[in-house]
Amino acid sequence: MRIYICLIATALVCACAPLIQPSAPSETTLPFFGSGYPSDGDPCRRLGESAETIDYLDHTADLVGCPVNLSTLDEFALNTGATEVFRQDGFVVYSVPTGQ
Image 1 (cartoon, helix red, strand yellow):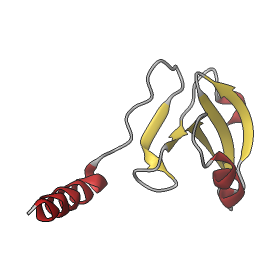
Image 2: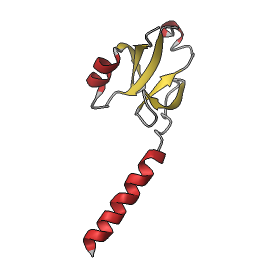
Image 3: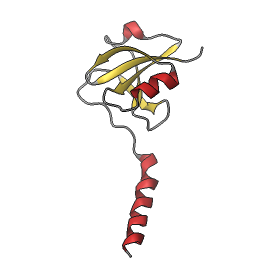
Image 4: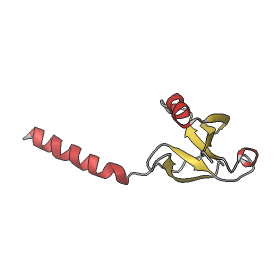
């Protein structure tokens, strides 16, 4: 009986996982938007224009912020061709080429 309860609980958690969106970063002035980068639900998010980001915005790249403690930062940079541009408030900000 316990195994059935565990299986049902696991199925419910898995069914709800796609509905869970990354929470808005707290304690930062970085202008995050979107629901994940490069895909919805991913922990990194795009950044818009602000005093902190204006010098790094470019029509040929996305500006993306990732939590500094993300275990896959190196993999993210390698897979996307991202270049780190600065760190602020516990986030690493990358310029990610868009291929234009």
